[in-house]
Amino acid sequence: MNLLSQSTMLLLTLLSRPRLTTPFHLPRYAPIIHHSQTRHHQSSSSDDTSSSTSAPSRFQNTNNNADQIYSALSSSGTLKVTTCTIRNLLNEMMLQHNLTPIPADALGRSTMCCLLASSGMQEEQMFQLSVKGDGALRGCTVIVNGKAEAKGFVGMPELNSESFTLQDAVGKGVLQVVKNHPDWPRPYNGVSEIKHSDIDRDFGIYLAVSEQRSCALAAATAFKGILCTAAGGYLVERLPDCPESDMEHVADNLAKLVKLDGGNALPTNLLLEGKTPYDIAELILDGLGMQPLNSVEPKALCHCSDDKLIRSLRLLPREDVDEILREEGKIEARCQFCGRVYRMSPEEVEKRMAEAKGDPSKDEDFGK
Ligand SMILES: [Zn+2]
Image 1 (tube, rainbow, N blue to C red):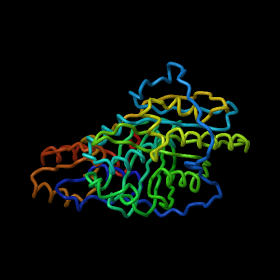
Image 2 (cartoon, rainbow, N blue to C red):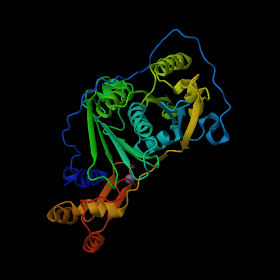
Image 3 (cartoon, rainbow, N blue to C red):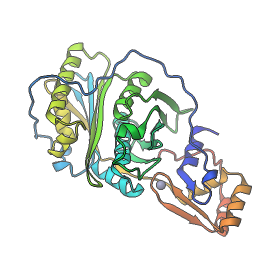
Image 4 (cartoon, rainbow, N blue to C red):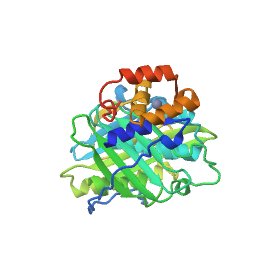
């Protein structure tokens, strides 16, 4: 069984028989250790910069009312900056899963890491991040595709947020990344150790160590009660032939950005003040010129369906399916990613399974 079929299995958890759910696991992977370094949250005593609000209309996003992923290059083309705001998306995920703020913070940060790192990838491609820590959160998984459609879940959605910090909740373990495309012969797998347990810094280390992408990355959220008031982040990537002077310049700009935000959940204060992804990218590239690349609106979207439930059932031993039908009188399953519940009568299961064609272990529409 390949990875894709495992992700199909993950998609639908049988409510009546949780023991039948195949645990999601990825093959062991030995990372190539590289000497790239991440730059993160650097501090300096430089003065503030002010931001411009003269974004072209295509990139404007007054008060961050819409979710947005914005990307740009420096004028030399050797630095790429991607910035995002996903407040609406995260509020929707909180509703889907009844999340308290700490699990929502973890899911929000993971979602932003995926969206930022996969910005610009082909629409059919998928990018999956699994945070596999030993903390009370019991892990977190997010999948995004090239259309910036995101779905995800955490192990413990209703964790008492007063008893844990994000770091406690995540714990120690590994980050695992799977990337795939329908045209690829096999998925790409990467893994790196969880060192800081705050997801964004660990994901920055993953990009540097496992993918040799020299970068600075931050992603954070802010809440008022159970409402997400800000969720945003940035990824700055060094492209080939980037002169050292540009790297120093952007590091200075990031230090200014940290100071301007003034909080420990960068860049949420800037977002709450109304700075948009365009404004934040402009601050990061201040003095280096900015060539806008793209702006897309990410969505919380899951493409689960009763067809996928049938596919999952076909992967189980037939006698197990029959046993559930005998004991429960129906099949009831809940999508782990969006919480949608599917119910099917024995007659419907029988009919659909008889009609089903193809190899159920091949998840042709995994990226949707
Ligand atoms: Zn779903």
